[in-house]
Structure formats: structure tokens, C-alpha cells
Image (cartoon, rainbow, N blue to C red; front, side, top):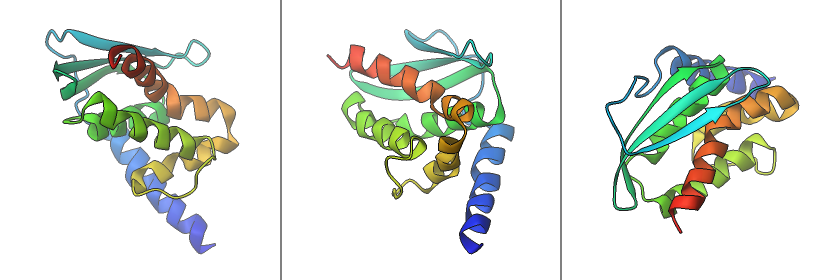
Length: 144
């Protein structure tokens, strides 16, 4: 019971806050790097924009529309990657995806745990990982 209360509080704090007040949610000025995250099954659709210096993401913005889970997840993603190199971003993405897919239970990123329940709902799992999967593809292509 206590564990359920903690997860409920975490959900409230992380998902609802990041949906209502998402980090860098705005149409970005011209930026040379962008990623499209689109789920045709539910209609979630975001564009992520990056200002990079070498292999480091200096600033990140996103814009579009989606459910509370996909929007909050994208907001968390941008907070985690700003100021990081593409190599530093890889394990962050991997850890988030492992948490959501139920392959890992503990993390130093407490906000990731708010998305752990998505593993029980396949359609919500896709919402949580949408932007992360899209960024993973970008990082793999760009870091080569």
C-alpha cells in the first residue's frame, strides 16, 4: 500500500507537472538538428530541436501535441540531455527505456520511475518511449 502511494505521488509530481509545465515547450528558432517523434496509432506528434556544439547538445526544445505521458516524458528527456555529449546521452536513454520496459527497477533518476507503470499498458509504454526512441535513432546516426 505504501509503495502504491509513493508511485502515485511520483506520478502526480513528475507526469502531471511536466505535462502542465513542460520544459522548453515552444517552437524553436532555426536549429540545424531536429527529430520527429510520431506515433500514428494514437496521434502523438512532437518535433525536437537541438542546438549542438560539436557532439554536445547545448539547448533542446520541443513542440507538438500528445497525451500527458508522452508530453511529460519528452519534457524529462530534454532536461536530461541538455549540456551532455551524444556519448553521455546513450546510457541515459538506455536506462529510461529499461525502466519503462520493466527490465530494470532501480535508478538514480527518480523521475524515470514515474513511467515504470507504463510496462503494464503497452499503448502507454509507446507513449512514454516515443521521443526517447526517436532520439536514440538520431544519436546512433549522428555519433558515428
